[in-house]
Length: 467
Image (cartoon, rainbow, N blue to C red; front, side, top):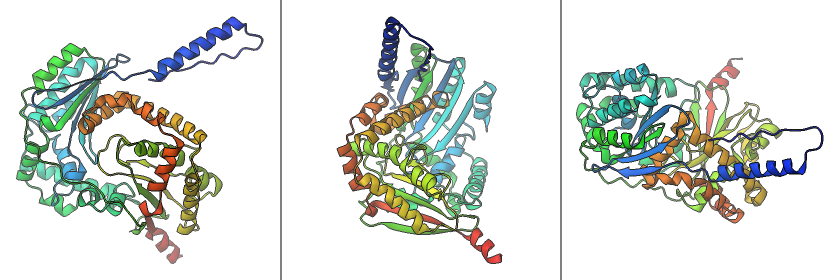
C-alpha cells in the first residue's frame, strides 16, 4: 500500500491556519503509514496444513499460493535437479484435471499462474478474479491429493527440463553465472553446493518409483502452507479450505539433513571458462549471518548501502567514478529476496567489464569500497539505508498484484511458524545501530569470508586472436 502525498505549491502568502491544517494532515498520513499492518489470520488444519488468510479489498482479485517445504537444497543426492523436475510434474494432471488442464482452467477464468523451485521451497500460485477463488482452492487441493504419475508424463518432463538446462545454462553466455555457479563454489556442504538445476545423467536416471516416493513424502499437507490474499469472505473461505484440503491425509516427513556451513576462514577464488562470453565478468559473495539475528538485519541494510540503487557505494565507485562497468547487480538470495529462504546464503554482487580493464583493477576498486564501510558506517548512512529498505519491503509486499505478500506469509509460516513476522520486519531494521552494523562488517565482509568467481570470456579471446 503506497500513500501518495500531493504537494500544492502556491505563489503568494498562505495563512497560518492553512499551514497548520496541512501539517496535521501530513502527520496523520505519516502515522497511518507507520502503523500499517498486513492482516494475518493463521491456523493449522488437523492434517497439519498451515493456512494464512490476508484480506485486501483494494481490487476484486484473489491469490492462492501453495508452498511445499522442499527445495533444491535437500533433494536426493543421486537425483540432482529432482525438486525442479517435480515442479514440472505438478502440471501433468491429477485425479480430476488431465494433462495441462490446470493451466487451462486458470487462464480460461481470466487468471495467471506460475510455479518455481527455490533453495528451500517449491511454490505454485494463481491470481484470479475474486469470484473464482473456490475453483482455485479446489484445483490446488486436487493435485495435492494425488498426481497422475505415468511414464509418459515423466519422460516428457525429463525432456522439457533437460532442454531448459541446455537453453538457460549450457548454451547461453554467462549461463548460470552467478546464481547457479556461486553456491557450488562458496559452499562446502553438498546440500548447499550441488548443481541445483541438475546433471543431465541424474535427470535421465529418475524413475516412476522416485516420483511416487517424492510426492508422498514431500507433497503432504503437513509439509505445506497455503495463503489466500485478496478480496474474499473470511468465513466462506475457511469453509472451502476445510472442505477441499481437510481430509487429505498427512505423511511421515523425514528429518531434514544437516545443511549448516562451517565458518569460512580463507578467501576462495575460481575462474570459469565461457566459450560464449565476449566480456570478462566477476561475482563476489560473502556468507550471510544466521537468519533473524541482528547481524542478519544489519546485512540487509549493508545491501542497501553497497549494492542497491544509483547511490549505492559500489555503483558510485565502479560505474560513476571509474567507468569499469555500466551496472552492478546483486543482493541477498538471487533466487528470491532476503526473507524467503531458510538455510545458508550469500550476499553477492556481479558485473561485466571490458577486456581493457583487469580483474586486479576491479578487485582493488571493490576493496576500496569495502574499506569505506569497514572504517565505520555513520548514522546518516544507516538512516538512508532504512528508508531504501522500507521502500523495497513495501514494494515487495504490494508487488505482482499482492503475490509478494502471499510469498512472505507462506515463507514465514513454513520456516518460522509465524507469518505475522511480516509486520515486524520494519521495526527489526529500525533497531539496528551503527555499532551493530560495524560489528557485522568486521565479521562478515572480511576477505576470509569471501568467494570470488570470474568468467574467462573465450569468445573474446578467440575473436582477438583471429584478428
